Image 1 (spheres, rainbow, N blue to C red):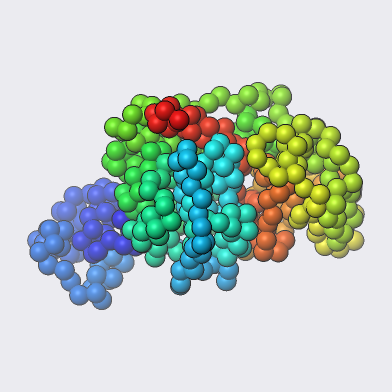
Image 2 (image 1 turned 180 degrees about the vertical axis):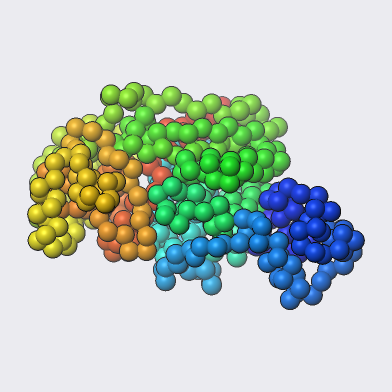
Length: 456
């Protein structure tokens, strides 16, 4: 059950025990509420009227992470009022039975990488309209929901899936929104309400009890609230019968041409005949042998400002390019049409600034993270930006910002993966995504373990 779904008694206990970590007597002293009243509330012997419940929780929030002192940026593209379900007429579940659910799915990096490892996505949910539109474009025959996960009853979702023949979920993935933890967010704060969305994941885990689960977030989660969030997530999952392993990974170690550190929690359900605990695989690309920006982008058509190309001008020049163009490995359809390769609009001053900036150097004196990429190195971490993010990186040899296809290449999305929503929102989607190639490396041992147990 997520925090939003708790009744007053459960919210009070959660705030006191998990967040404040104080006794009932200490809470009484902080709030001025009589000790006996707090005892009765927590036992459920007495529940105050709704107006007083809100007042009490607000009073507690003055000293806790539930009070959001800084406003959270909101986009009109966030759909939190209604649930929009897409239920296809047919849903094909493979004989292998490897099924996965993609919670907080974003553009679908988890679903893409899991598909390469042999899993079939059967459900995705996100509240950002361009994210769900992109996810549905690339996973059309899958049950999905656009809306607030706190309003989507997992029992109802389970009934929908069972009606389509899905009897068991092998894996649940969750790229929990990271803005509250990210050091790149200038409004980063322990009090960001998005920091508690993992409670909604717990609600789904209780209902679906998957064999494995994966939670992904930014490295900043480790330092948020002095590590309390990392500990709370791990404890909450372990309490549901999972053995949890946590590790900080760099996507570049796994063949992604980008220096991108993310924290992964992987839980194995105990008592199912699976591995006792998950062991993270070592990346096969050691530092100094990373894939580079040139490995990722050198075959894409040259563009000037505001130009667009829908056809390839060159054959793939590297193994990585052949892979993303569907010419080797995995089930990636080869393409003749090129998606999302449109250059941004820039003023002449911006074009001149990029042109005069050396590769690997900042384009703006006050924004040193906005660099012109170096062909010989991996990209720095792609970021989503705010509601209207500007271009982040300059192209290494062309005087412009990156196209969405170039950003997708740096994240290891195949060229067949189409992003929708307009360039601004597609920057958000590519910046927030988990790289599919990293997902594949993580999930492949999970698929092998489940198949070993099932004798498939």
